[in-house]
Image (cartoon, rainbow, N blue to C red; front, side, top):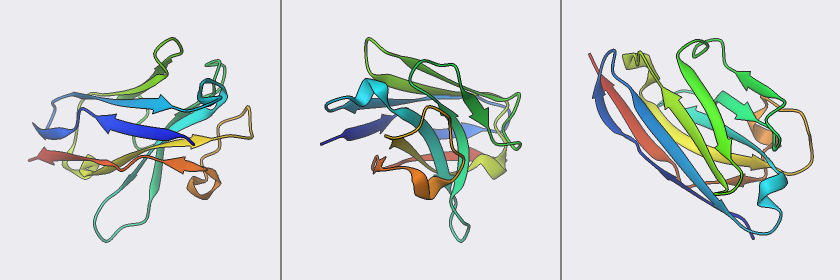
Length: 125
């Protein structure tokens, strides 16, 4: 069983920054591709960023390129999302997700096998 627990969300002003963390536990979790996916009220789920288990494959949504950075600490089984220059349109619930079968990062949210409970990020204008 895999458990993903997000932390670090909150309220920030436009132009501010936040760092989200996802602590992963479970067998083989260090071998999984990890991603951040967000969903705003009334909108579809959106892939934000993903990283494979060795860090050789990293992908970002166009909407966050240059502003967000994903990384992982293998020793701690933790994935981070550093968010800079935040905009009101970044407001959403952010979910950590794990994908168990591919070395490459997929941007298709439905391909992810395990999900955290989500954490809210609110950017005020």
